[in-house]
Image (cartoon, rainbow, N blue to C red; front, side, top):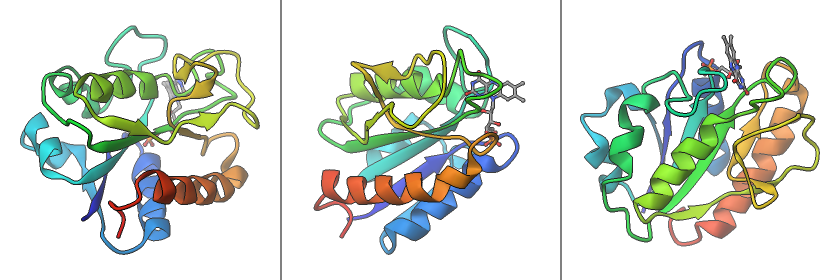
Length: 175
Ligand SMILES: Cc1cc2nc3c(=O)[nH]c(=O)nc-3n(C[C@H](O)[C@H](O)[C@H](O)COP(=O)(O)O)c2cc1C
């Protein structure tokens, strides 16, 4: 069983975080750029996945990432991922974009949820400073927000705790 970490990026931060998460999760972890996919069907071929997405399209109702994820987000909802474990990780800036913090996570979360995936990896909002985020669902972030712009000193701790959470939530998929 392998875990695939998918990412898309504009300035490289999301790729860096994807690689750092892969190092924490260890063997049986692949990292793939969404730009390299042929179609949304490629998501059907993996055992479990983490989807890493920055927010660039500030305040938008749709296509919030502003990266290659926007090419796939509508198609994802139409594929079948029945029971496949999926976690979302978002990059954003809680200081400059505190009204839209990591908004793109929610759009991907809804798409994979509609495809029948088993969504894991939500985290409490405690410890984050922001005004609003579409990615808060039932009082929790629907994935892990990472803020390399304003809170890079907290990234190691957040990634480490989340990696341990994923190893529990995806037990059996991570080897
Ligand atoms: C023009 C612009 C718009 C942005 N919009 C948002 C936003 O709406 N919400 C947010 O949390 N971060 C926003 N950000 C911050 C980026 O998401 C953040 O810098 C992220 O780490 C970029 O990841 P990347 O290097 O992988 O593309 C924005 C940054 C810029 C420059």
